[in-house]
Amino acid sequence: CAFWQRISYQRTMLFLVGLLFGLAAINFIFFSRGTVPDTYLIGMIGFSSLFLFLGIAASMDFRSVLIILLCMAVIYFCYCLSFLMENGALYVNDRFGDVFDLQNWEFSSGTSVTQLYQNVGTFLGLGALSFWFLSERWSHNIRVVSAIAVVSAFAAIIVVSQARGAAVGLMFALIISMTRRQFQSLVIVATTAALILLPIVLTIDIEHLPIVQRTMNEIQSPQPGTRLSLLKFAYDQISNFPNMIWFGRGLGMFPVDLGASAPDWLLSSNAASVYPHNPVVEALYELGIFGALVSVAIILAPIALAWRNFERCRCEISFYVFVLSIYLTSGSLAYSNLFYFIYGVTMGKIYELGSESSGTVAFV
Image (cartoon, rainbow, N blue to C red; front, side):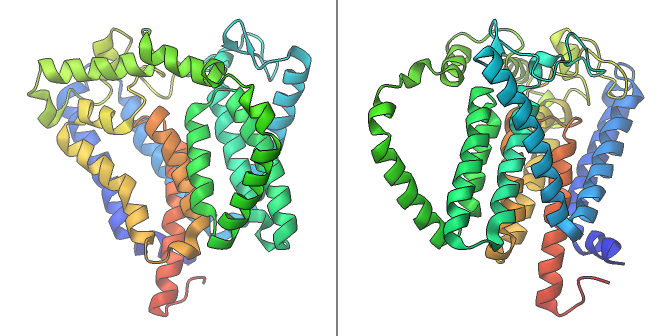
């Protein structure tokens, strides 16, 4: 059937993912099994594989997935807009507000409601991209105006929620998603809007925008638990113990070395957010140089394989670039289900284009 054809066609991408999981399993057995529970390895391989196959299946009808993502984004947008109108900001006392009225509910992973701004940014970004591609069948002028209005509204909430990875990812994804005509139209509309709104823009103190101010504070005075402090810890450990660069410290050992409890993935864990927030750095620390190289190869493989047919897979590659931006700034080896889902979608699209060029049947 088409599903198994899509899996068997992209042996390169599957081999790389399987190689990473194999390295993780071997590394876990020899270096960290006595400290880190088996559920961590099971959760990483099991759920990442599951979402990869779900993505491959979803690629056969990705338009339906876009509709679902857009509906989810509209729900997120309505909740955020309602909270924003009621409280004047999405942040209360420098913490992300209880937008969804979850009160003090703690997630099983240890995440609190104050950290849901990343989820908000992610799904609003996915919704913005979904609307952009769903509107491709509309007339050109209607599409440009409506797409700019919807994408701008979603992007505004992303910025207000201070989801920085999603904001940067959406910008790059939209640039990649445009044809030459669309890009020219956008430049004309954006230039006109900028000239009209120039007096207002000049009055904005960009340095004191919350999303900019928060970033500058983290760079100038990194606090424990922030991305820069976690990356610095990884750098210091590798510098002080250079031999670990070959085979790493062991899968799941980063939070243990930092003084947190060992991650268990499937169960409640306070170590859920204690990772370098960059899977390549995490792979280098825990799996060694070989794991890091395989992680880089996994990231680059879809872009390299889709390069010749880039125009025909702009949608999937745009989504991949968006998710990749979040993956590289907030992702981890074990908690990246969305990345593997979109990875599977991209894999399925590459199969479809490859089967067409070779004259084989793409759908059975």
